Image (cartoon, rainbow, N blue to C red; front, side, top):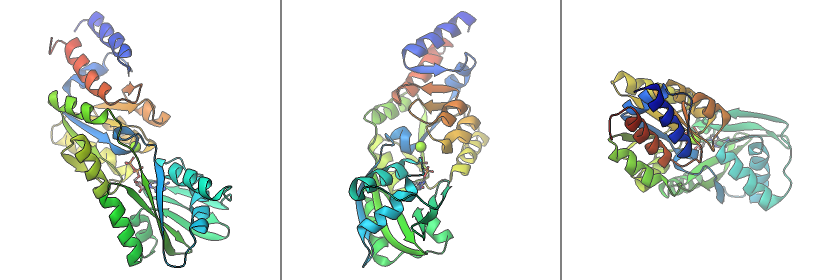
Amino acid sequence: ATPTALMVGTGRGAQLGILIKGPEVLENTRRADTVLLDKTGTVTTGRMTLLAVHTADGESETEILRLAGALEHASEHPVARAVAAGAAERVGTLPVPEDFAGVPGLGVRGVVDGHAVLVGRRKLMEERAVELPADLARAKNEAEAAGRTAVVVARDGRACAVLEVADAVRPTSAEAVARLKALGLTPVLLTGDNSAVAASVAREVGIDEVLAEVMPEDKADVVRRLQAEGRTVAMVGDGINDAAALAQADLGLAMGTGTDAAIEAGDLTLVRGDLRAAADAIRLSRKTLGTIK
Ligand code: ADP
Ligand code: MG
């Protein structure tokens, strides 16, 4: 294509809510045949809310929310925001943790009111030898089967509650997936979240392939593996956790509603956080480069 056609392509992109880093990006946009979609914050809004607290026998909901809320207040993860906001709403002012550390893709740990507290996935509990009693395991499985994310709270090495949070699928996601398929791309849902939750979201938006429980550092490896199979991979993501995969992908698309790390790592930004713009970008690149009329 002529430089003028490329300039027109990038200008039209801006009108559609797509920011393109440079005209050279259009070539990979045109060639993409597989599109990896991050779940939380990309296919879903990422604005989660705390729906329920399942406590183990003899535990106080208020006490658990104080501990979990205090720790999660220090984390920026969508799950953490939901827990911190829900806790503040129910118990008021939260204590300040004496110690805090995020464990990427797994949860948070720290010290609150003199107690060692963990909030996160079952895998985080397993790594720290915290067992899940049968009643909490049941609450967790039921929540996940219903498409919700469940995280465990442990205090001083014992699991004391399961918190249920949920997120809404963006209203435009199903149409975006349908359009990507119509353009001949294979959509794949890629998430660190539980398989049951991932399957439920995939079903809702029409994605047939799901890769769940993928650790943040492994997302880029998934991209490499697909590239090794000869695929040209586009990746859409919003989080710090997606940055390496966005950079590794032949085409990285960042949600404009996402983190700066994702936007910096991407080749293209979907300004309005509307996934349909990903399909628009592919169409536009094909048109600009003369593949379709
Ligand atoms: P995604 O790939 O869907 O954006 P992440 O890799 O960021 O998800 O997180 C995967 C899972 O790890 C979450 O669904 C949640 O269960 C757990 N998790 C991550 N960070 C936190 C946190 N701060 N608090 C509780 N759970 C967390
Ligand atoms: Mg995300």
